Image 1 (cartoon, helix red, strand yellow):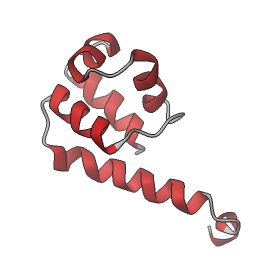
Image 2 (tube, one colour; image 1 turned 135 degrees about the horizontal axis):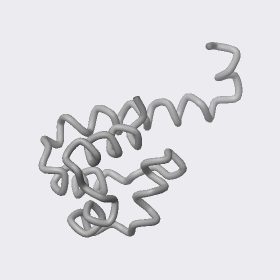
Image 3 (spheres, rainbow, N blue to C red; image 1 turned 45 degrees about the vertical axis):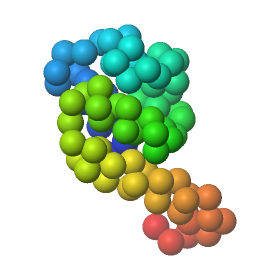
Image 4 (tube, rainbow, N blue to C red; image 1 turned 60 degrees about the vertical axis):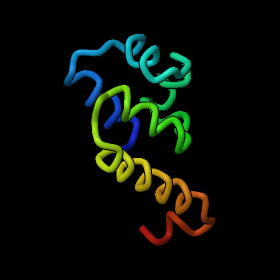
Length: 84
């Protein structure tokens, strides 16, 4: 599961609208929408803000963010598709 998908799942599980989460996390709504759709990568600080706003442990969320960071790094390699 990608980081953005996890954010959306957690948000929907507790019944928060995207506008409510962005207000709590003090993040732009368009930006969070892009993060949820994996069109944008969240910064470390945004991960902290989102975890606080969702009232979940940072460690729970950071593992998805780190996995996403590694995936993005690998996909930038010229031979990435040959490896898979």
